[in-house]
Length: 151
Length: 163
Image (cartoon, rainbow over all chains, first blue to last red; front, side, top):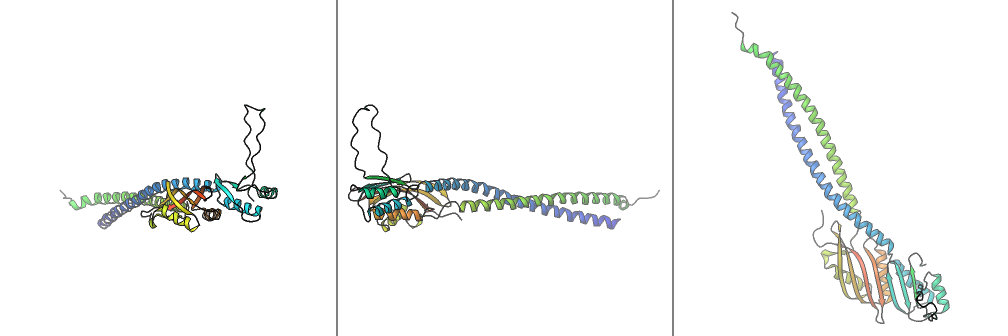
């Protein structure tokens, strides 16, 4: 009986020590988990910001493909059969407008249209004076295209 | 009258106390081990989530077009444009948006002179770096080839980056 009692006391001491040890392990693990949770919160905010900017970037990149400038310039050169003088070139919102320096021939205009470059739509005459004679059409120097149209 | 030894009278009580203590501590240890397993599982999940978030952040944007540690971004862009045949007269950074990982999306406006070939080079350069730059707007006009370029570019910030 005495031996069993002493053995029980010793076992209790060992179990108490194990309890303390496991307590410390739990505290350590929870400390690491808290740090990881804090890191997750920081990274979630960062990832959210990056994702927002990345989405905006991808959208802008799709809407404004720079290759359309090269396509338009190449189409003009091909249509004219070589270098051609340009008095103005504009690129905005994914579209390109080109103003030729001289009136192109019908052949060139046809080739430009085939390449996807078309004259911009003319403004409608003012509605206040529908009986006014139509103004003479200006020479078709301007052509426009977009990534979807340029071939 | 018989005399009872104190040792004999405390023996059973001590044995009971020891047995209760052993049982109680064993139960508590079992509960603790269960809690420790749960805490370790939570920690592993949290570390995995943090790792996934880091991967998601890293895969966001980039690489940077301009390295702010190598000089002023506007000056670096002017050098790039000069290499492409533009004669830049002014390059200004007009806006910036933090993009994480030490990167910034910066809006630049460059003005100078160029011919259509140089403008074509700029467009092809932007097309070749779609993850680093976006050509927002461009205009070329006048007899001297006045050019105005508006573009967004990813810039590595000048400060120390994230570890």
